[in-house]
Image (cartoon, rainbow, N blue to C red; front, side, top):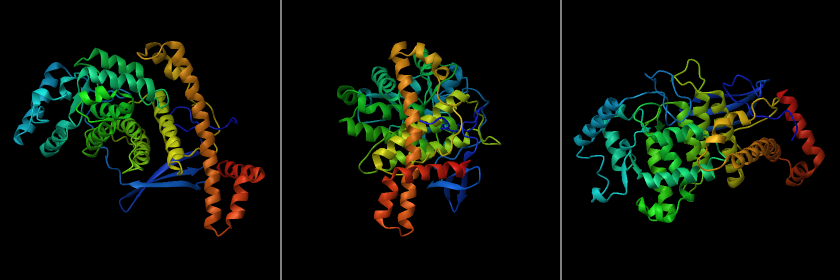
Length: 406
């Protein structure tokens, strides 16, 4: 790995790639995310549907910088929100416990029974939307024992390679379960359940009301997706975190779902430091680094699985200052509830190597794109294969792209 390759973290104090950045344009109800070099050359544009979850203006003050919210509530506020929600549902003949013919035997509970969870924008939604969310079990969560297993499996299997959440902060909020102080976004928590679902025991999944793992994945995905589509969360950073987690969803019926969520994660990540900011968020630089590296790692994984071009590119990076470092994980190395310090340190070392590999793979994908461009211009397949296989041609191509960005 040559020094001089790294990921640019938008909004970070130290710029990793000073000559590479993204730009978003909206043309005819379609959002185009474009990556430009210092010479303003368009590199690998991607297109996605118009942002499905536009960010609304917030009335909250800046606060938390991770999956938690910046709003501090007391017992009275929580009780008021619960009562308001119940009143909205009563208009439609529903209640938070109307999830089946035998509510008393329901394997799930209303999310309001967990003091550490909140849905920031739910109270602002039309009552019809709230009723729809309730009827689809989107406002329900598994019982505490089941959630314990989901969370444990998430930090055991998913988090080490996609560290989009702050594990130490998550465990503090989760275990304290206080009605005051920072909370965990309901959307992020539902997305976490989906990501960890393949590692949860079949017995637990059935206790949660699912037939099998595939049924659990589909239902959990539909719940989180509907929460997103109905805009129950407005903060860009939180939406980006949830999108990265939902990018773990795989389905034969919708093989491109993961790629769509990566695109959405990029869209929201780009809004974190938009100026003027649409939503007041105080996101620490270390969490931005976690987010952007998680997006890149998940994007590269999907590119390998689905054989398509990456949504994030890394051409001509010239600094190493924003690689993930031990300082970004100093607290969770000591406060993980899943791994001891030595194991966490070893996993971090492996994560750093994965980041280096992801940058190399992205550079190679640029070369693959060059071959595709040759074919489009009418070059024979024999010439294209030579261009792909010949080491001299590969080096020339990479050097060419390095010069373009420099």
